[in-house]
Length: 317
Image (cartoon, rainbow, N blue to C red; front, side):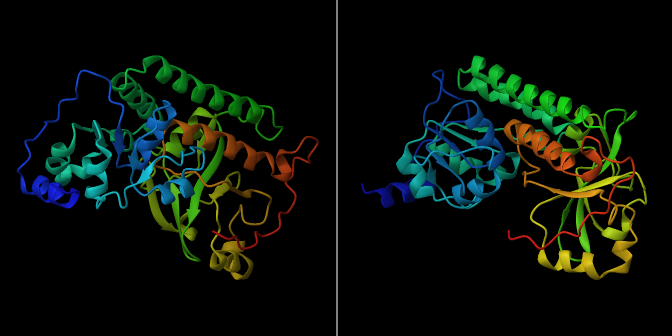
């Protein structure tokens, strides 16, 4: 039987279902159909034989290199089933969003559902716990503990760097920060307390300045004029800045009237996926402190009054 015939038989139900229960032996040939779970898997030193959309992963999950040996299986929810069959996996890792595919996937290999950490009100803490679940599944508990400990050390080091900056050394109650991503010249995504970014702000000793109705959510899409007028707040945006947004900042009187727009209290930070795991969390903490340290008011010996900042130029995605 050739490969295409085998695939047709599989999808037609001629193959017996292996079942969802994972084999006693630790799986070695793993397929992961979710980027966040792929990051957790790679953090354990487990290299999947196949992943969904590896070019996209490499572009957005820059803190987590993917070896060239990993086969690109295509879209997360329309993976190449023929390729998956050919890879002969002994475990497939999916999220609850793949529930409609699970029956078919279980005929290929034992299938486990994880990835609930993103729906947690404390996504970073939940990602640490889920890392350990994967570690036990792969019989790599020691590697899991080491990976979680390394992320915690990186976040602690970032906080120590932040605490040493003059502008943040005595920020009782936490200096207020907006964490945003600009969508276009009128709208931005603001991250709330229940996002990965929101939890890490608190771990760094900062206060989430977003006080809107959606504060206790992962994120909300708003117009920039909906940001609270907190004159002490710093606005941090995740790069890249869309060209039309940069033009708006130079032309809009409404934008220029915002308290953070021209007072050295706005900065861009390196792109980090908000749906990432422990490696992205550590990278976020370091990138955020890098961005805040670059502000004029954060420099050693700077005047207590922030110096004007130049409006950002357009960035290339």
